[in-house]
Length: 286
Image (cartoon, rainbow, N blue to C red; front, side, top):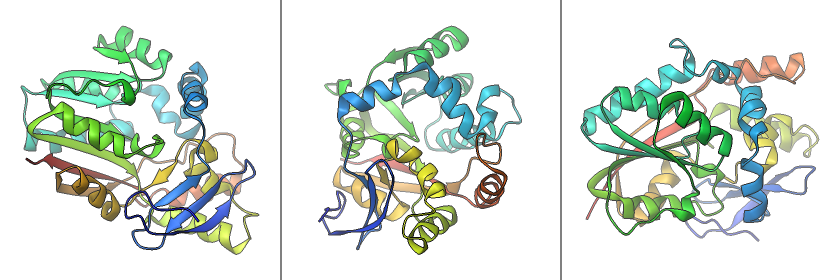
């Protein structure tokens, strides 16, 4: 039986996908885990494909194709995150984004006078961030981060922790890289959201026959390995001496999804108007 990585309690099977992976739920804290895990090399090669950002991310919410349209939902959301960061630690301050994608959030932070840098595993995205925005971005995995010195005032990880084979590594590396009193902002899907509840219920009631919505919630049953909620992420953060300052819900509209039928598009579009992700902001304590 699977064991929860947060509270070490037993996990129950929920649903299985055609690729041989299954979703398990912790009886105590509600963490969802996708098992068995893929090999690290398999995952690195999966993310370092041009198609990942050129096609697959655009397929999920194609407003990202227009990455800097000021009225795009993703831009409004990024501005909200930055507003919260300014309130806690205004510029000048050093900000690192882990998994910075094409650098849109970093460029917005730079325009707010932060000294920014980022790491990203996808070569296409790294080159885009450098050429389009002139950003200091390195092609590097979280495992390769050097934590010998406390270099940053703020670390941001949006839609990253759910992709990691070892989510604790994000907290561990962030603690080593942050200055005393530094701020860590994590954004990730919420296992307590309405869209996840409906997707799980549909899969359970049909004995895994109607798994499509949940399949997308888990990144085609490949990408999203652990789905947290504000409660269990707080437990994990405390293990690394982070104190939660603030948490809020948000969503990125998915009604632009491509390659789905009309019923799937309608259902996911309606459900995604309800917040299905959350941000937790933590402060590094002594």
